[in-house]
Image 1 (cartoon, rainbow, N blue to C red):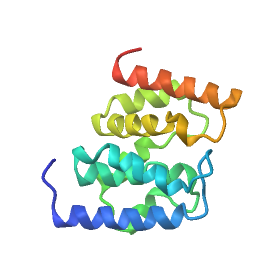
Image 2: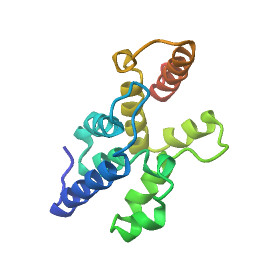
Image 3: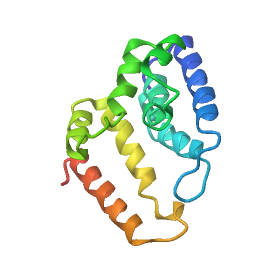
Length: 152
């Protein structure tokens, strides 16, 4: 694990509290509390250290919680580096998925988080049923995974 400071641990704890509150009433496509997805993605990058884990737990915050902005993250005391990483992980309105993936691929930390996100999103056991729409989404995630790992 990368060296971590006490402050890194405090920022991770703060991120966990923020994500838990922001996603409290939100559920994933399988009906599970959305926070479980945030935790799974965070766990998927635990070997990268607290900084990356913090960004991972917040990876969907800006995209899915309109009350959260980069300015608000800064007010909460998150570093510019962390805010930039979470912002990088956020797909922009109207942005082509391929352009989004290309942006992520250029940053090893963002790429690691996105791969953990895709691995969790591709777990079939999270779905209550396999619909045509869910199969198409899984295909999209699989293609993205292959592209980011260089196997596509």
